[in-house]
Each structure stands twice: as C-alpha cells, then as structure tokens.
Length: 173
Image (cartoon, rainbow, N blue to C red; front, side, top):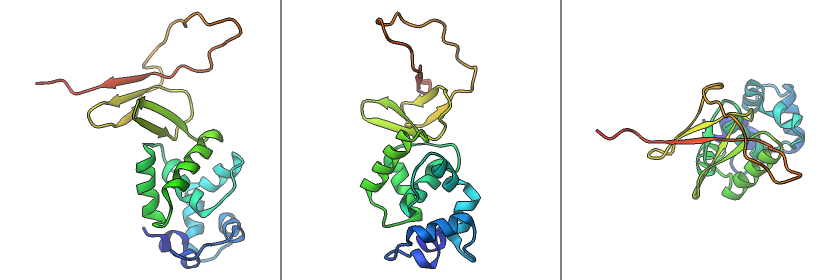
C-alpha cells in the first residue's frame, strides 16, 4: 500500500491534506477516499482523539502501524512501516510521535537492553519475553508469572508498576 492508496489522491507525496480533510475523512463523510476507509477500519483516529492527541496524517500513519493490532516494535521498525504508508515521513516525526503516544498512554516503552527500546501497543500491565538472539519481544500470558512480595521502599514511596522482561535464548545443541 502506498501513500496515494492510503491517503487518497488529495494527500499524495508532495501534497498534504489539511485538518478539515482529516476530520471529514475521520467522520466517514469523505466519499471514495482510501484515507477514510483506512482510518475507519482500524479505529485509530478515535483512539487518538480519546487520548487527546490531535490528528495529522503523519500521526495517523504511525497510529496505524502501532495501534491497529498488538505489536512490539523499535522506533526504526515503526519508521520503516510508516514509510510504507507515507514515504516522506521523517525519522524525527516518527520519534516525536512515539513519544507523544507514550505520554498520552497509548503505548508502553520497554527497555530491553541498554541499546534497544521497544514500543508496545498493549498498555495493560503485563510481562515480556525477550529473545536476545533475534531481538523479538512477545507478551507473557496473563497469570503465567506470579510476583510475590515487593522490596522495602523508602518512606513516602509506593510501587507504581512492576514490569518483568525475561531474557531467553535457544538452547545450544
């Protein structure tokens, strides 16, 4: 799918739709627009609005990559997929949009090691498996891990969350 088929004729590579076009397409009143079908089918526009995030074509492209289905992706993977929808989207726009989505509570940021951060589209509390060889992150099914107890905390502090990343690798033969 390219930018023209995703966002319709009006929002080709060098031409941008204005916010009125986005809102019209979001409401489904844009007839014959690939953009309206794209947004309406995935519901990402509604999720952005509900989180208080303003709509732009770039944010909708990143939202389609991250919010249309459960995924765990690095920023560079999001960039590559977003460019499949909107080739002119910049690295800075994708990074800034991921930060905005995280701040709005639409994504979780998982630090899997000192050099890799993965964005998770599932914001409910859960744990992860991280394959150290492939870099793939997967969800641990709810209830599969039970954490008993918590460390003694300094006075005036409380546990906000506990996020466990289990690092795995294939057994050697």
